[in-house]
Length: 115
Ligand code: 5GP
Ligand code: ZN
Image 1: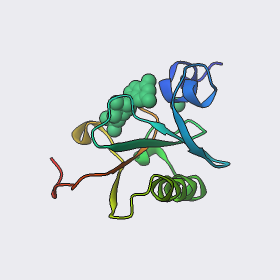
Image 2: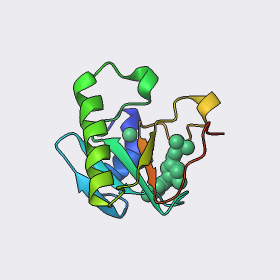
Image 3: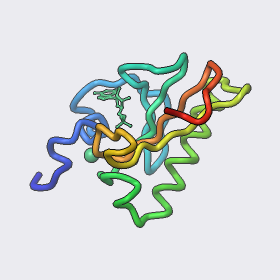
């Protein structure tokens, strides 16, 4: 594997090389619980293919599948009172894993604006 997906932690989860608590999947994306949950429900939705960030993607179909799965996760987790979907992009937003991911956060009130 010559590309950057070889050492990418989320690509390793997609490939089943490291464990994660899976909650949902579709053809283009998978959803699993965040290791360091910031809310009662904190699930990450990641495309199966390696995309560094929203700033690197020109693939609306994959982005659509990621958001669709985020909505499925929220329904499945019973977040009837609402939830937040966050895509940190780049250093100013504090993106730490360089494989695009949507955070699905819920189960408590969300402050606005976010920090
Ligand atoms: P970011 O700060 O890039 O938006 O979010 C990265 C998220 O990935 C963080 O919330 C962090 O807790 C989570 N994370 C990092 N490494 C792992 C891992 O190996 N497994 C899981 N399930 N979550 C991870
Ligand atoms: Zn990756």
